[in-house]
Image (cartoon, rainbow, N blue to C red):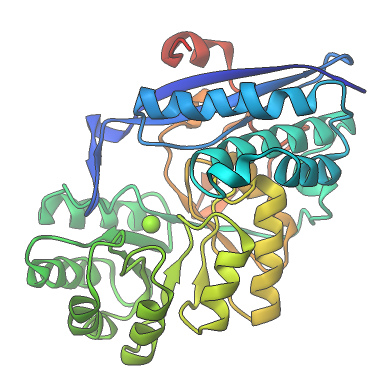
Amino acid sequence: MKIIEVAPFLLHVPVTGGGIADSTHEISHWGMPGCRIVTDSGLVGFGYTGTHAVASLDKLITSCISDVYAPLLLGEDPREVRSLHCKLLYDPPTHWVGRGGITQMAFSAVDIALWDIKAKAVGEPLWHLLGGSAGKSIEAYNTDCGWLNLSKGKLVDGCRRMIEEEGFSAVKMKVGKPDPKEDLERIEAVRSAIGSKVRLMVDANAKWDLPTAIQYGSRLADFDVTWFEEPLWHDDVRGHAKLAKAIDTPIALGELLYNRHQFLEFATAEAVHYLQPDASRCGGITGLWEIADLGLVHNIPVSPHHGDMMQAQLHAVIAHSGCEQLEFIPWTLHCFEEPVCVKDGRYRMPEQPGAGTTITPDCFEKYGISL
Ligand code: MG
């Protein structure tokens, strides 16, 4: 089997309720720059990354796919994924211009498309190809009820509804209001509404500095918060290590780290308690797998970031013994031939061959941005 075409694409899909906000961003659409990898066998693999839908930036990612990676892929056997992963990582001069961000996101989209083809070629869902068991049950935790732009009333109602009506047993809410005391009031209101058995996570999206994170992070234990996510700037290993020593609530991070070496830095500095790699940024399924291995070695649970890559990540989470749960945000489910499905707070096992990333023609028609 040979690759005969690498065709980039770009989609901008509307998010819930017309727009959402966390402590650092407000967005109305989710960007999906990615590619279709076409083979001479007729099989087509789909892979993409996730952005805040800024077309000029997204097109840098699709250009990187078509100008840098596509020439290295044409004529290759897409089933040799790990070998191609190394070729794309070490051969092109991308490490001179960036080992994270645009180049790594383009690289991740390609890796995911290759795994999609490999699983389609054997007629199996990717989780089975990776050695996973149909008996493993994966918990979904819901973030889509916890945005910072929601009023306290809507936040509380939404979290309660996810528990009582949708069957979730864990929810995550954003913090980072101008006055952190308001964040504590919101956390208190949610905890009191959802009861003591439901797990509650809190995410600052790197908004706080170290003194704020110590002062207010130390209060999170009062509300039995499972983890404090991205309290500080993404690259600040020393700051997170200091915070981890200062507060009782475990720290989660990793959605904006781009490779296993960065995760290793945090793990060895004892600066993190939950690893949150995102396959659409950290080198695709191959990169996610390496980071999940690292979690196993360090006895740190791995709970991948959403990144709107539930589709492919679910397969890796099912198969890897270091992973037990996956974030759930349903913005783009309607874009896929086999959208992931959650019932009673648990992911249903995907059944179709591939990585679950096949996008429908209707979605391209509706949300496609010309390149
Ligand atoms: Mg987060």
